[in-house]
Image 1 (cartoon, rainbow, N blue to C red):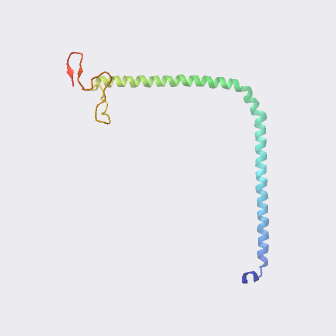
Image 2 (tube, rainbow, N blue to C red):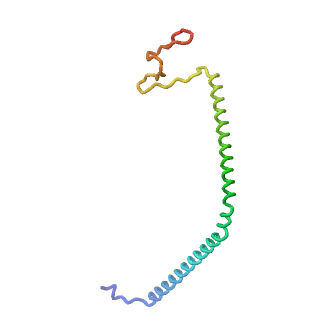
Image 3 (tube, rainbow, N blue to C red):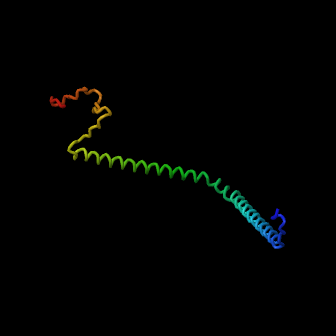
Length: 136
């Protein structure tokens, strides 16, 4: 083979060794940075465990009481908003019922084309009105 017979230049071996050294230094730096970050995170968690957790444990009943009071207050507020909205809609619909020329809405026809009938009404469509008149 002709390629295997070509002698390797000396500078190529030096460049390869320099690249290896640079990669090793870079790897060591990354390992060192990661170890420092893990150590700092461990110190922060230790501080939180020793200082913040006992404080939260001591204040937990008062915090729970205030959260429950806030929850009750928000439930009351939501009930008032819902009640106000329901009354507003009821008033609007009541006014519309008086203003509309046709005070009721008919149901759309069913899949077979027939109008739906309420229970107790005859199927032929004739009904007795209170004044004695017949309506079709």
